[in-house]
Image 1 (cartoon, rainbow, N blue to C red):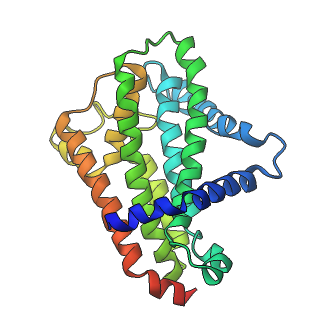
Image 2 (image 1 turned 135 degrees about the vertical axis):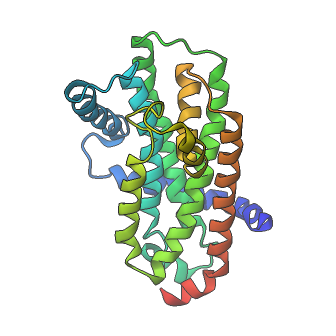
Length: 260
């Protein structure tokens, strides 16, 4: 598997071209263009502030920062998986005409959304300054949380993109799973006091996104880091998801090409 990954380095120019194409197509007919990378999380943030902070009075310190630091990685995660579903079937012309490693297509979708996430993070800077949140050495852990997030996201895009070739119902099932996962992940609420202590260990281990968001927020807001055992479990799960997803993709790659 490592050899297959290294082989992708030989196609880095193609990957760069496809990522650029994906970003251009996404905003081609949009008046505001790349500004949507900031407007999308901001508008979602305002809706959540209205509902959960003002109407339901969910008291979370620095709620806009807390919310955005959960929404931005989540948008990357959900958009990457949703966008990858048709990444194979939508590139039949390229796949049939010339040989490329087929994993390039879900990979470029994920990388395109990763670029969007980095651009979206710029929105957090003025809001963090507005709330006078001190950026300290915790920021050094931000790349780790992004790496964990990238691993699990890429693994799932490999898995669902090829599965969708054989079972088109996947394109209807996955959005439901993502929506359920959204509410099971502490994006607009805090875990403390909401999950009984005897279930907390299970929850943090089986939901690596909860750990990733905790790392993300600890890096940006200076809050406490999740327990080391949760971080280790999250790393193992994210790596395992990437490994299994990629291995599954390569195993049925030839069948997938015949099917499309």
